[in-house]
Image 1 (spheres, one colour):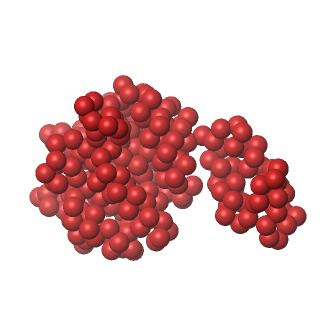
Image 2 (cartoon, helix red, strand yellow):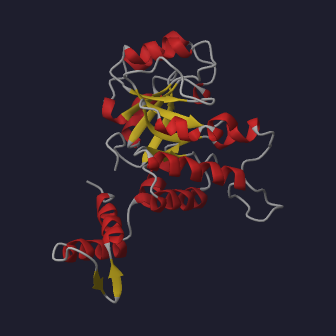
Length: 273
């Protein structure tokens, strides 16, 4: 698990709603204090006060500012600098990471066509520690109307190919530079099955966490990221046997080499503390 991510369920909380913030923190592994889309029309001074007085653990807190094209961007960043929080999520990035973020740990959002086209440079930026993506903004900016296939189409409920490509590119480029990835929200929080399947895929693909917009999604995501008992038993046997072999070995008729040993260790690392 990357050092910046303390658990798989990352819950958005609107910064303008002081009463929601401690509830979100008590339910989720990490909280995103949101000054952007999820906050709606917000009184910034109230929202800033809520963030500064929230008393949350900085190791479990992300602040999402507005995008660099918004007139409040510099003000939001300045507020974060005055807070105990250093992990900042920046949305609406265009072709490059904006200036003025030195000293902060940036989660760059890939949700514009320009960001997708420039993802290699964004992932390589020294201030960026992780990537997150947004399907709905990207769909809108591509001229589309739905990020997922509808009931009258094959693949109902799953992402369209452009979205799947963006998610995969983000993951590949982040990993190439040693950065983590957070998977996008599943907007229909009543769809527990769909949320579970997406989170299972994210966990098994190597994502560090999945974002969510409702507390009901937290346990579903945790369940999806927790390895199954059979996986855990296999992983423990692999790791135990690997201590006696400098190279490849066989286990139950399966050839085990270094990548599988690494996967086994990662499975064990996903167990709850």
